[in-house]
Length: 504
Image (cartoon, rainbow, N blue to C red; front, top):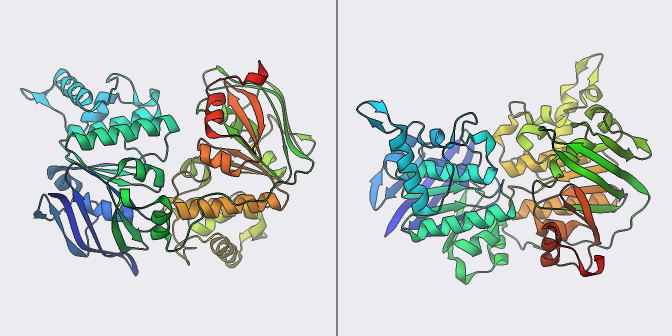
């Protein structure tokens, strides 16, 4: 039995056709992956199913009954729940308060937290989603926040769950846990639609996969019968190279040197415990570690977003610790931040205004911005890094898909011609075609003699891109390895605090 059937769904935004007669059929009690490039229309299709957008044409059937889903409340009433990529939680409220918000259970007309707590714990036990109801959202991990989002939709009685890029903000361990949760939900009779770019996740957990390309239905396949490479080719319309292609590095003189660095987090806990390493021009230096081992504090120290207690940060012979972000940029360090929305973009600004952030003076004469020059410059970034849709210079950047926002940020930072480019989670939440493009761009900058500092939780990315790998554990670089014959198991052992035999 089909729990969801969408037939001939078409959606236009002005003159732009986001979906063109797309179809989707989801089996009951199964996991159905929805695959496509950034901007292909996956989220638009699911937003229509969730009642956020009306379709311009097409039909929707839930459990073989035709429905007209005009709002999220109508979708919820039909047993549909959506776990959004960007969590919809209130940080100051508790876990329990967030779960019941808008769907509170009452007793004799009064809110009964006891009754709500009991139902939350019953659901969490049934599906293996263990939580602490009285904890504040601000005090729990990102992975735990996602569990709360799942519990929210289960609490509202959802039998069809849509997961929109659910692992984009998770660590590898949290991702593994989530895949187990999704499988458990399907085995319990729930129908799952999984929007993802990650081919490994599709192979791991999904039975079927529907591919959309540029708003068009490409096909639905049995996941067990196709390879990751075949899925990638369906998605982008050409053969995709899944491994990073690069020649051996030719490192030159030191560009960035970190010496005996010590720094604390917001609570006064020492998170950087005497880090030492050197990054050379013409080299990609990868920082590998489990999240929470000082990566965030290291980045903020280098970019002067955090004061250090002691130690030195030296760029081209000049100390820059405890100065200012403007001084860091002046000394030719540019950063691709992990959180593109908070640190990389001004979402309500246009694409062209985001292109000149931090260097407006270069595009002004006598205090007046030269808008024709700004538009031309933004067009160059868009063309060079294949940002879609073309001609989006005047659009608000929040209208672009996440992957195209990311490509735009990387284009902007590369065009700034830094000596040191810091790339933090540069491919988080982007599709396989964009990952291939971004990886090639970083290698190309290395080959031009730039120094690249890569901080990533994705071990495949670290192993694929890095020339040298520094393993960070409890705020220290505990091993430095040349990336020639190291394997993922060895790297994972070191990241967990293991010691190699020859180091004993």
